[in-house]
Image 1 (tube, rainbow over the protein chains, first blue to last red):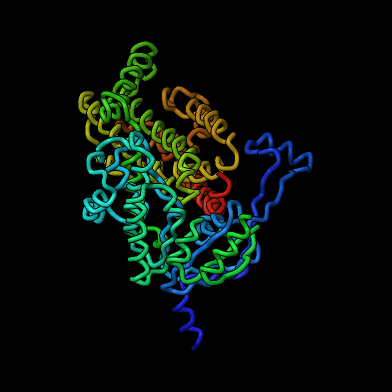
Image 2 (tube, rainbow over the protein chains, first blue to last red; image 1 turned 90 degrees about the vertical axis):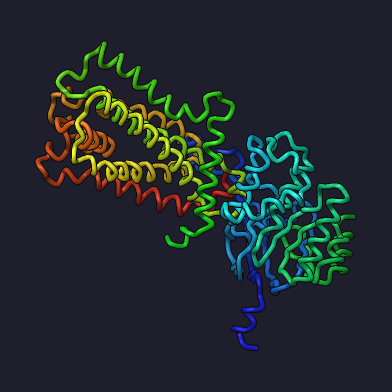
Length: 251
Length: 266
């Protein structure tokens, strides 16, 4: 295989990426604070290494899991992949369009009605009004909240909000999907819907990055999984082994 | 630049502006009517205080409308910069969780301000009609002046919104600067009231003063002092335009540099 061919089979390539956050000891987001600190010559902040030495590749059509405990750097990694953060060093190549959603219901406004939020959320996903009008009935039907669409979102229950957000998010037509903890909320019937959706994605050979704490889903859907702990990759391995390592980390 | 003007970005911009408008008059009985009522009431106040009580505009034809036009342009500049200033921080939820071109957020608040300006200009034109202001051929230049005002406000908006992410003082500083600017610009008083020619010239180097005076000149009365007449078509006449260019350039460059770190700094 020549280089060209290799490149075409890769959806995401991450080479030696590192990311640190500067956490100021005394938060100085005022000019006075900045001046005082500047003249004292003690602009003290803590450098927190969130990710280091991160290298991996995700192939096209792969269902790729990312597991790790809270605070291990998963979310930062996802935000780097999505282009929300920029890395301190290293290279991130994304081959194709990536769903920008890191969380469900981004941009949802409690003061707007369900309907208005669908359109706004759709626009954030890259759909224009015409396209949204076409898919609107499906979105509502999937979320099972037809009756409430003209009510303000602040009157929705958490479960209803998540269902609505999920129904929009799965309309995303991008080459790479990032799904972060989508199964955390929702009743059993809704979770089954999510699982059906995952199965469909898998059959269609979509490139998916799934971040979850549920090892059942990792072993059931993923082709490979990455275990991350304390800012570093522990191992990129089979889902079964990844689940095993993760369970050990939690003990 | 072209890569920002995609179909989906345009749709997003439209949706953000729509949301802005919906939320603005949320819970008010008159709703959108306030967009027109506000300039109407403003006009009433200006008319009573400055035309009837103080008689500031003696000698200037159609002074009430002249006054209102200046006020409307200033309000546009004021509103657009103040709203954009907090726009990036205000939309922190989006910035931290989704990748959209950051400038779209500033653009959406600028478009809201622009729509408001047009509504206000409708009110101005109604008063022009009532006041029997003759329609001048030079009015065709007005859109260009509005464009200039927009670009100036956009330059400041980009700079301020990015700076506000790091330093929240920027909001208070800008408020004071706007206050000072309001009194240093011939909005409430006619420029002819300032008898010192040097001060007159200095004032007209300020782009916002130049825009307001030129707008009055082209739409209401040619008896308006403009830089064009004051500087005798010298190179000083170009200074305000140059300043607009500089502000826009600095604003855009600073915004682009800082926008990479918005997500972590908010």
